[in-house]
Length: 282
Image (tube, rainbow, N blue to C red; front, side):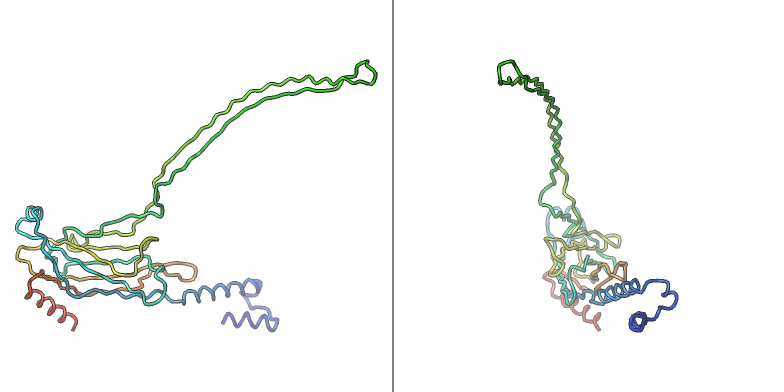
């Protein structure tokens, strides 16, 4: 509608009605062109992603003397979960963060440790060294000269008396500072749900990418007779979405699915885990 008004004013030489008439036509044309460019940029399409992981996973018991002494009457099991991030459309650079949550559905087991832990990286390979040099100096000098005729015919005596004085005072000050290179988190992780779950925040860096496969490790404290359990895995991909002249937080992709885990070597527990997942998918 606005474009047709501006076009009609240009073609037929009409003046814009109020409130447009009080503003130069060229300014309104620039406004609508900018609005059109912003809208077309927003319509370029947000990134589309898919998450993939298995619906069952095996847990291995950690049989160490330290685990036995720390968790008397209980045992420690380790879960390794591989999650793949697949970019379907758009640009992966628009994805600022991938968040993964692994939680116990009935709060029966507790998180003992997890990996990767929070990790910081820097764009610089070493700390930053700043050197500042200050130099102060003073000098003073004078010179006198001239010509003086003498009664020797046409001979002119050149008299070049000079007075030279000098004073030098030079001071050099070198100041050296070593600054720690700025760092930012590429991985942030911690517990949720009163330590019955864990979260991982993955962020891209010049040395890493969010697309691809990510292996997560979680160790749980479970009862001594534990054979399997039901977990829930949720994955989110978030970033900044442009709307006109502002940016707002947006979720580009979201996946939540059950994960049945069982003790390694327990065939009956594995079959029960597969049956549990098949019932959930119905």
